[in-house]
Amino acid sequence: MLQIAPSILAADFLHLEKDIRLINDCGDVIHLDVMDGTLVPNISFGFSVIDQVAKIATAPMDAHLMVVHPERWFDKLAKDGVQMCSFHWEAAGRNTSRYIERLHALGLKAGVAINPDVPVSKLYPYIGKADYFLIMSVFAGFGGQKFIYESLDRVAALKAEIGRKGAQGLIEIDGGINQGNIRTVEEAGVGLAVAGSAVFGAADPAAAISALRGA
Ligand code: DX5
Ligand code: ZN
Image 1 (tube, helix red, strand yellow):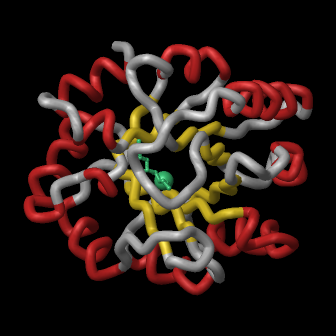
Image 2 (tube, rainbow, N blue to C red):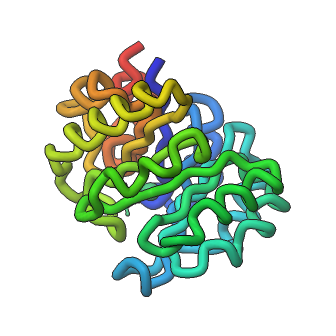
């Protein structure tokens, strides 16, 4: 079944505990967007927030590192008990396999992320190596952007390539997900959908998560 990862980028940072507990109770995965203002044109939060979230998280934490030199933070994420970590291929380049191996050595699931302007074929060498692939359906950096529909073709192409290789690999999608596009996203082959504004901008976030999951 499709899993939902609410992104705390859209949460209420004055009452973050309430929103983390909501994800523990109703969501599948806690999505943590880490931005450095260099790889992407925005700064979000770092370990002053993640350390606190980790204290009360019971749902698995998924760190989405939108930073240059993502490898600098792998050990610290492991110490915080983060279970999933994705880094951008744009930041890692030819170090991608090495970073996947390092995350595995630390006991984390490894994800490779790409922005909408990176050919999806750049991910193909990591099929069978990475545990998951994060297809950005907006340009990384901000919540609340409009879903780019071409992302569906990219998901389908990646799904087909994973199938052709007889490999395993979860596809995560991130950006502009809402109740109007989630079913087509699921049909294209996504197994984990990130949702920020569609969850925390809703009057009833718990109901929004259930509706997105489609259960
Ligand atoms: C954007 C982040 C997303 C963002 C999604 O760079 O990676 O995770 O929080 O927000 P929505 O769901 O509002 O597009
Ligand atoms: Zn994200």
